[in-house]
Image (tube, rainbow, N blue to C red; front, side):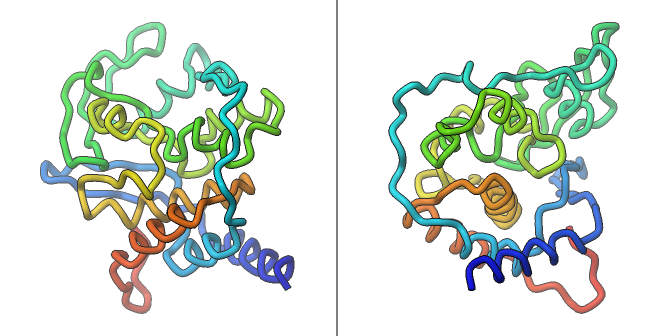
Length: 223
């Protein structure tokens, strides 16, 4: 039955159009990232995740998740995300962002200096490690750390990203309440795709955040 449910959910995900989610900020800035699943599918993904206690952190190190990988001529994944999520981003000859503005969905701040911006892993590497990534190869962990296909990488304020650190949803949620639906949908998508586990407290916190998702009238586009 579990396999049949997982297949139905995967089929539904495949059928969804590849759209981008736009999060409007106070300054009308936008954040564009691969579209997380709609709330009902995100909830179905969450319910299919294995609930387990956190695994040991023995052997963990950020270098076990190599990043940032090359992404196009002269660029790496970080610079690709900075250009994708920013407004009027100007790059130097080495593809590094030197100016622009970025809206941080975690805390609602608009940033005008790239020094104030981090590229956040929605599911932090340390959380992934204690959720099953400790058994992956380094190549698999590199793919996870540089995943541009799923809603895993997001430009946010360095202050909010460092405040979160590697804490899961049971211990941290975006200070901006309007972003919690997006955050929970993205977290569920990433963990479902990579077959990572959740703790009981993490699952309950994600379900609570999914409850904040506003109903969508028939025919309304996602976003």
